[in-house]
Length: 172
Image (cartoon, rainbow, N blue to C red; front, side):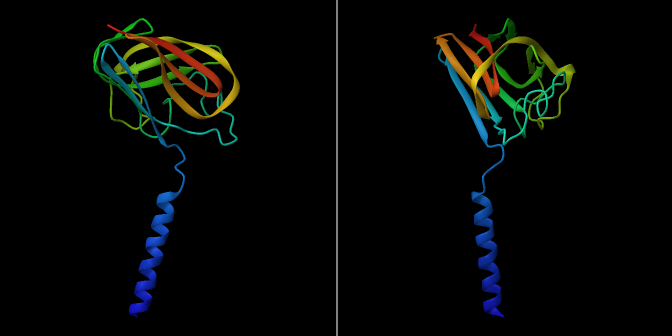
């Protein structure tokens, strides 16, 4: 009986270790930039294409998208910002997007800490237009990054499939 319990215990540990090493479908990602000596951070989850049609299908046109996977995409800024013409005070926010075939809007929302699909339009701080362009080769895994332009400015960049979106970010 002791040998059976030991064998079962070992089997549980081996299974747990294997599950712990399994590839996460949408692993966490972080985009960071320092403007005027202050940190701006975006924490999000990074879904992959995995052979799926993304734009207009998995990311539906005309509906607010969580802009990643899992928990809501979180923006934290230690400094007041101007994002695409909108004033964003220092603090914590959630980022959503509103995609369409020809244009996208970045949504900066005051609600924080929720699951990614929990969207409350009444909490929108701002909606700003994003520049859309076509990538020459597909990006398998959704990526958010900053392209720093100067000590006080950067472009916020989203890339997935063959779509690239950007919006200027400036420290105030």
